[in-house]
Image (cartoon, rainbow, N blue to C red; front, side):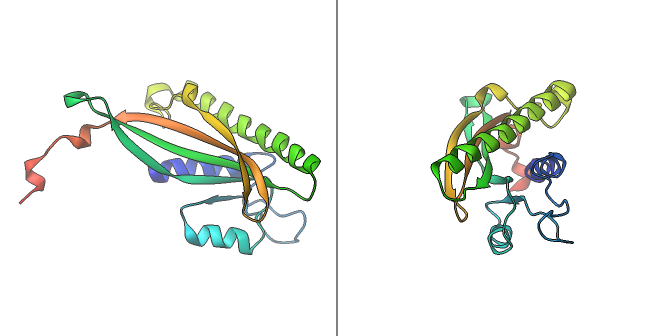
Length: 170
């Protein structure tokens, strides 16, 4: 799930008309835009700051989980966050413009998540996703005055791997 989730979001960042991760930079001839990275990958985070992360950008957070239910009916709740950020120049008006811009990108991603869930149903990567549990908060400043939104998402998946298997133990 970890790699598939990262790859999926990276592909969306490459395809979104404003984010355009790995697209050619308008400002720097011949260079590729860097507008997606994982915040739990130190190399990517340092590279994003060192090479002037492009705006708007998508930052994928790590996963955290917990067991829910009881006895033999356990399931796993897996939560993650996705940040939608852009740099703010100087004024409060700039901040408001940034929040409008990144809020739009966030809603585009949420609508794409929902569309992919509806089109693939219980067979696709979003079979355990509930868009009704999405929560977002304003984020920033971070990464040299980037602001925007942090959306938290939850997947509830089987905990079949929690079943004890004596073969795995000596």
